[in-house]
Amino acid sequence: MRLTLVDREDPVLRQVARPVPDAGSKRVRDLARALDELRIESGGMGLAAPQAGISERIIIVEVPEDDWVGYPEVPAFPATVLLNPEIVWESEEFVKLPEACLSLPGLMGNVIRPSAITVQALDLEGDRVTIHADRWLARVLQHEIDHLDGVLYVDRVEDPHELWYVERVDVNDPVWSRNPQVLRLREELRRQQPAEPRMA
View 1: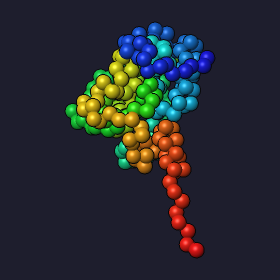
View 2: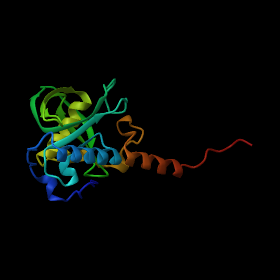
View 3: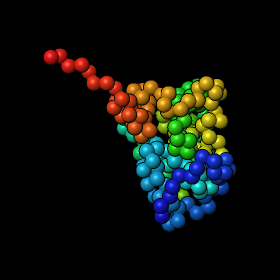
């Protein structure tokens, strides 16, 4: 099974996805594997099934072992498939950070979200799991769960001036230093810079 990202105008991105009825089945395992392949290929930290045109409550999240995601000393979180995830608790502390989305290429925006959450879901075998998340994992989970309810991060940008195109992003900002589009932009800018004068 090979999946692709749907166009940003696809109505599936605005639908409330249906619950997964057959956790533990071969169908769901195959679908999860294809979604993760698409996520890795697209360079995303997370992916929700609707982004691939599938209106089911499935997400995959990962936080790599790195320091580029806007928080110091961010703990890594392995790629994890969650079925029918639900946020059951949110902190009273909120944090504003920039987000991007595979479904909205070229756009970034500042989004305010709770700094910590608790999520309950099913794993691939159908067992119930509870995740207490803070920092960037909390943000990725919220972003992907939003997709299951037809919500895009741009809906949560409070000030339109805090939504911008990738060309306006500081490409040296570590938050975006591994975003594929930013890497391409950085390389283009590097090629456009004049060579330093050499002493004779």
